Image 1 (tube, rainbow, N blue to C red):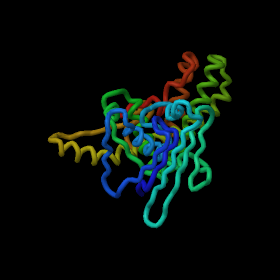
Image 2 (cartoon, one colour):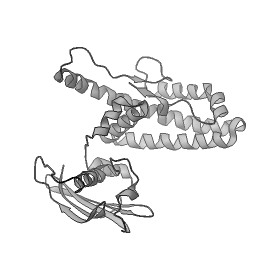
Image 3 (cartoon, helix red, strand yellow):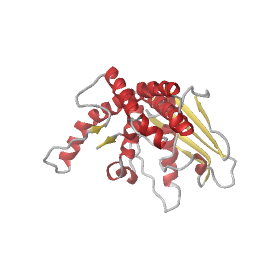
Image 4 (cartoon, rainbow, N blue to C red):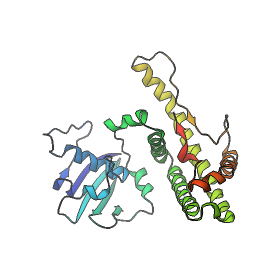
Amino acid sequence: MHLVWMELKDLRSYETLRFEPVPGVNVLVGDNGAGKTSVLEAIGYLGTMRSFRSVPDTALVRDGADAAVLRGGVGGGATELTVEVEIPAKGRRAILVNGKRPKRVRDVLLSVPVVAFLPDDLDVVKRGPGMRRDYLDDLASRLWPQAGADLSDYERALRQRNSLIKQGGRHTDPVSLDVWDERLADAGARVLIHRRSVTAELQDEMMEAYHVVGGSGVLRWEYLSGWVSDGEPDLTELVEALRSSLQERRHRDLEIRTTTVGPHRDEPD
């Protein structure tokens, strides 16, 4: 799959733009502020449905415009996929794939493969575990469609559990909490499996890159999770491990009114 064409309207500094890359390597050349990064940002948005600049969507709308619109054609063999996104200055964005609304945003992510390497990507190594968790989740969602769905289920259950204990504190209904513990444990176990699978996939690639730059030792990237014992537990064992950890931490969670154990607290190092 490759980008065949892209059109922008009222995006960043561009009132209009049509971009048709040539096959192979394309180099964007221009003065500072000419809009080179905005073109790359738009390409990235078509594939990820978010800006790699980590800004809200409304930041992409040109000053004074009602909405930004970006369209792109992605080709692969004899087929071409058209993706269109309208980002209003106020309100919800609209996404069309071949003229139809996709059922889920993750369907678009699998249709338009995009990889961006930016200076800020070094934060995956330099900054805290949150960056590494996000990195693994992003890769997993692109490798396996179900990974994105499992992550969404986990985040939804986590929000509901946190909302419940934030409102009730030590007086939270234990039966209601059991329900969300069960959902959190099931989705969380699946998220962990996806993250560990990505870590395993990357291990050989990391070793090869390490040797290319002159490293002679052994480079390992381990996924540490405080609620999982050593070894290779299966899904059922992981669900039970997270459920037990949630029970053990329940008193603490109710005291500080937040969930303190789960994949959202893991430390990939």
